[in-house]
Length: 75
Image (cartoon, rainbow, N blue to C red):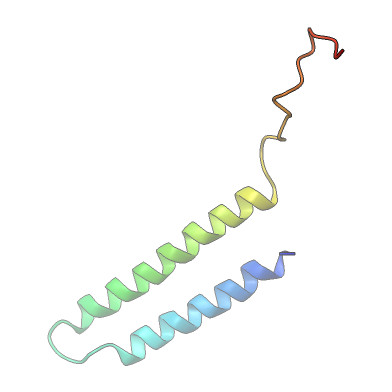
């Protein structure tokens, strides 16, 4: 079962990947483009995962059963 530590561990992994992308990006005239592309991609993937994780962990709307109608009495 997932808990709050998942977000912190994921953030640490993403920061590590960002540092690795900064250090190991190919040298040359497009080095800035490589760095920004890799770091923004990693950060965007983390944000999408974190938003989805939090939306399922603490939903804003409580689920309701659709097969129960208040106006009908079960037989």
